[in-house]
Length: 189
Image 1: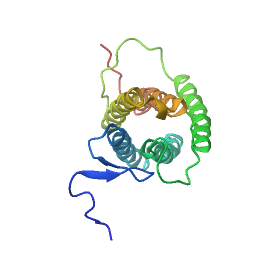
Image 2: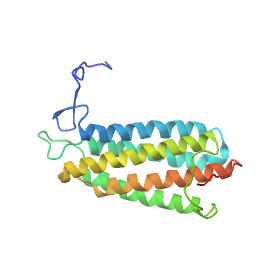
Image 3: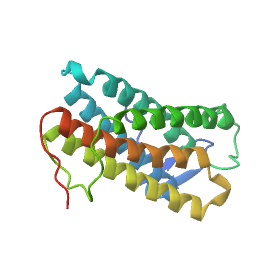
Image 4: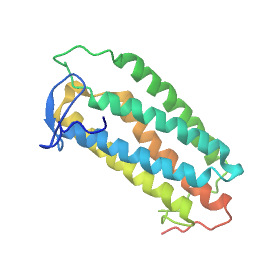
């Protein structure tokens, strides 16, 4: 059954069993990452019919998988009262490895771009604009995670925060690449 009615009073359970309000900073953090994943899905669907963008599509699909890992880590309460099967160290190592892949993708795209000339005004075409929407949601997710880690330093995960930070950089560079690869002009402030 898709509906359980357990959240009808505005609460949800974290991984570990503790019941919290749906506005809890931990729920805000993983909910924003979930929103980011949905924006990346839209971006990927916009790119997938265009064969020239097979590499970014594959990368974005892998990013979506990593975002589920991040959501899991964010939904996992520190020192849960009930045991879980989540191997935090393994998930963190996975994010660290994928962060290196994101950095390589940034470097590859950056090599195709003209020098940065100032603040980029989002746009150029609809797909690039969607990439900027995803980038700004990624930055919001980062702020939510930083707030969570400020409030609950015992749950801080440096690999998770590094990954989200690097992902927003990737989305920025990808947005520039999409404008130029589609024959449009970048607009700088």
